[in-house]
Amino acid sequence: MPPKVTFSQESVINAGFEIARERGFAELSARLIADRLKSSTGPVYTSFASMEELKVTIIGKAVELLNNYALRPYTKSVFLNMGTGIALFAMENPVLFRSMFMDSAVASNMFEDLTRTVASHLDKDNLASCLTHDERQDVLHKLAIFVYGYASLICVGVIHKVDKNNIIKTMLEVGRDIIDSALGRSKSEGCGNSVRS
Image 1: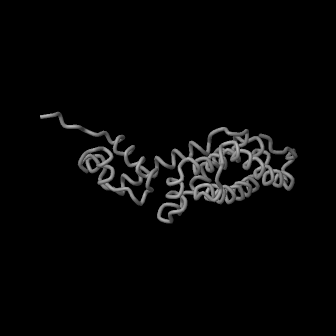
Image 2 (image 1 turned 90 degrees about the vertical axis):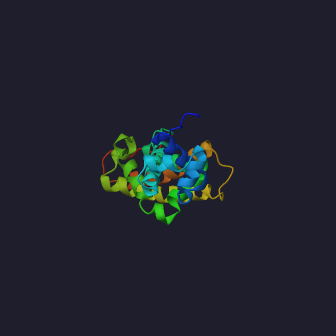
Image 3 (image 1 turned 90 degrees about the horizontal axis):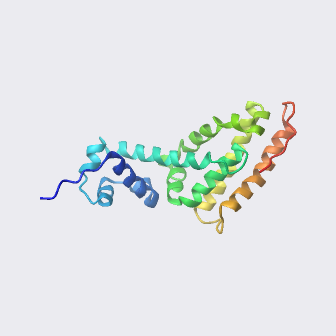
């Protein structure tokens, strides 16, 4: 009799995550994960008390991946890196982006959580440090609205023939307009700099 194959909790999470990337969170099921693992549903329920618990873990893994995209140094600006990363995430993970930001069952707090994560890194942005807290929040809010719309249009294919360089160029242009406008209105001293790539 062949030895019994055991599956780690990590292998269950990874199988579920790949299904979420291909089909979205709504399609996650113990049966699909078991099929991916070529096993019974036993490993799923051995590793997790319920599918809901596993789904929360998989969503957390998706958020971690998104944060990784949003916090990479594509440019010298944390503001612009956020937008570039989210747009690239939408381009490279369209099903996951749609499931995270366009499915009301999951999206309700997702964008706010991401914005808070990015806001916590703004002290590393030279231009942001020149703005007051309220001015930074205003710029972040305006960029977030643009980025969400831009990434959504990429995700659904309305904006096509886009690559990393196009996304960075667009973010620099739009970001320059938004940030330069904030710098021009800023009440802080020494806020005369402009956005540079």
